[in-house]
Amino acid sequence: MSTIKSLILGSAAVIAASAGAQAADLPVKAKAVQYVKICSLYGAGFYYIPGTDTCIKLGGYVQADWNINAGNYGKPAWDEGGFRANGTGSRDSDYFTTRARVQLNIDTRTATEYGVVRTYWSSNFEHSTGFGPSSGNLTMDYGFIQFAGFTLGKAVSGFQTPWGAYGANNNTSFLLGGYDNATGINQIAYTWQFGNGVSAQVGIEDNRVINRAQMLDTSITLTAAQAALALGQGAYPNSYGGNVSPDFVGNIRVDQAAFTAQLSGAVHNLHANYYANGASAATVETNGHPEDTWGFAISGGIQLKNLPTGPGDKLSLDATYADGAMKYLISGVTGNNFDHFSGGSGANYNSFAVMSLFDGIYGAGTKIEKTTGWGFRGAYVHNWTPNWESSLFGSYTRIDYNNNASDLYCARYAAQVVVGTPRANCNPDFAIWQIGTRTAWTPVRNLTFSGEVMYTNLDQSMSGTVVAAANTMGAFKPAGNYNYEDQGIWSGNLRVRRTW
Image (cartoon, rainbow, N blue to C red; front, side):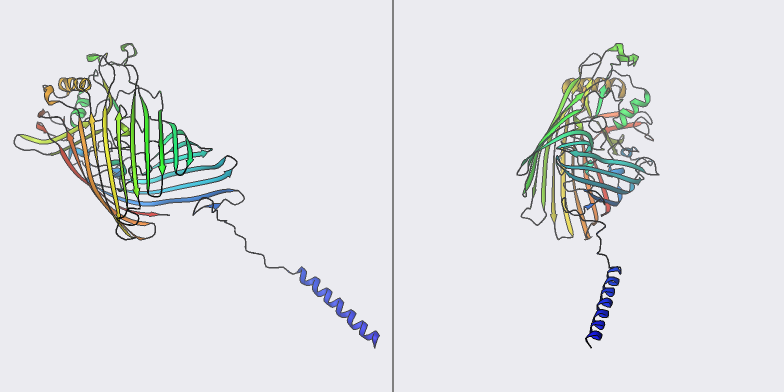
């Protein structure tokens, strides 16, 4: 019996061992693998690039705009920096323009022994009826590297406040009176972080495209076509020389829960071309040139947050003064020439305002006379509900040409552009004031429908009546009397944006 029992137990052990071995050889269900791992170091939306320690975030938006009495980017019909001269109000002027834009941005960050290394890129693909080819265009707003406190590439200017011209409106480039660099500027900058929300930055920025207005050489003899453009649109030949120095920019900033405040400064080189020397109109090296001079701009701003009027309400204020650096005051994609025509009365065919923005003015053998100006902007946003908000915004900008600059400008203006205009009636100084409102509805997260309307007043200082020949006041304008008069312009924008 014991022999049989031993045999049975032994067989059972063999079977159990075999079964265990076979079970071990069977495939086991693998654990779920997180192929895209969330990176929580830098906020929502970041993921680790597989196989690396670099975090990446993709973002962007799709946007559709309908601009009323305005061009691309919402350029009102007084800004001649666009594709068409809409200020004349003739039948070639656009009553409205449209634009569809897709923006894509990529943000990458890697922790290193030197701190976070960051790269950022943002580009726009757009089709517009108000600027450039109808087939659309591609732009790069930002493209920069940040490393050990340095920013290198195309980034927001150190002069601009954190809210820029985006205090409460859609079309930031046309709220004047301060700096708007919404598309970035090529730069090398260094930022210090002192703690408790206090920081400072210094940098050098390439001013060639963004930060230069026009330079006027009054010794140039204008052609008939140039004289017509100067009379009707304020457009003169630009006598700036090459780019010989970057702008030097810096700021001090305080960021707190209740407010953000910033003080900014910039210096700007004015480098003129050669003198034309009167009737010869020949700009050659042997004519000589005025010596370079330096302009500057200063700005201070504050944004108040968490106002007692409601959650998310904010008030943004800034003021700017410029001397020979006028694009820190009227900036962004805003042009340098402004005009607008409206109906006349009596013997006058039209009334009109025409104004030009110059960093400086010089004549044969003179130095550069720098332009000065100042501006103020304010914007208030109120949230009615989590889905509805309204805003009120406005600005005032004043441009002043000193007596020497005015004499040079008016001598040329009276001698060639408007023959016989008395000096007493010629004054290139001007002011622009604006007021507008915007309402936005966000029915679901990251989808916003908005509409804004803005009124702009061109307060020019010229006076009297111009007797003009046909087409000298602008295309299609007949011969007749035109009188100088301040002009008011309404413009509007309707927008839908889906951000992701």
